[in-house]
Amino acid sequence: MKTRPFKQIDVFSAVPYLGNPLAVVLDGTDLSSEQMQHFAHWTNLSETTFLLPPSPAGAAAGADYRVRIFTPAAELPFAGHPTLGSCHAWLEAGGAHHAKDEFIQECAGGLVRIRRDGARLAFAAPPLQRSSPSPALLAQVTAALGLQPPQILAAQLLDNGPVWLGLLLDSTETVLQLTPDHLALQHIGQKVGVAAVEPAPVATNLIARSNREARAFGPRSTELALALAASTEFEVRAFAAPVGIQEDPVTGSFNASLAQWLIADGHAPSAYVASQGTCLGRAGRVHLAQDTAGQVWVGGDATTCIDGRVNL
Image (cartoon, rainbow, N blue to C red; front, side, top):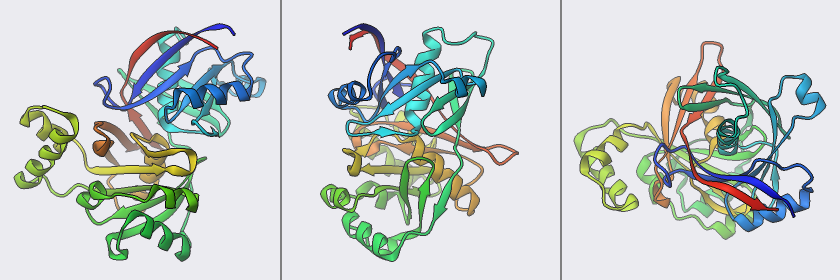
């Protein structure tokens, strides 16, 4: 064993412990894949990452560092909240000059551009492949989620490394009231993400949502709950039973592919904020924006909650 620098980062929240936690081992050199997987299984977080020097090919392409990303059950080629959290940890550890505001991360899925705008980081959504799901798959997932077919407005298989079945539902209430059969989703073997647009912010809707926020996050002022409700336009949930995670608190990869789909098909504006984690007592906020070149950027705040060392 070797003592290595370690951080635990809360991603997609400016307030500690309301986002999605990420374990980051800042020196993954000399660790085997089996050791990395074992440690990720032990942390039992949705993802654990290990930072490494870029490969020769990555360095030649301008990569600043390389990251390997593990769920408790498997390695991922790419994931969103580990990308932002790993970059945040790398920067805190002195990984780049303060004057530099654009970075390149190497991962199994390829090179990912990351930019810094003040305290917030954003990554360039990877290229997306999407297609219509088969009627059989859609029927199985609909049943596992307890939905009725009319509640699904649109559906797409979204592949940007991880593969998600994305469902656009008829209301945020439908999204928040889902009680999935996670065992059925595990047997189906398909990760599923759902989203719905928030209705126009009339007082009754804001009051109703403020009550949900208050129940989920503990005692809070009505003003804060109303502000949280008014700050978002989409409500999102992500279910990943096939990789050992029943519900992910906040999911960068799914929000990335979701935004590419929704913006391209006219279901969403070119910039919006998504809320995720409400049903888990979290307040994740994902900032999505498409630039003039058509690139979708996925941004979020990150906060270091644990800073220390790990024997590994």
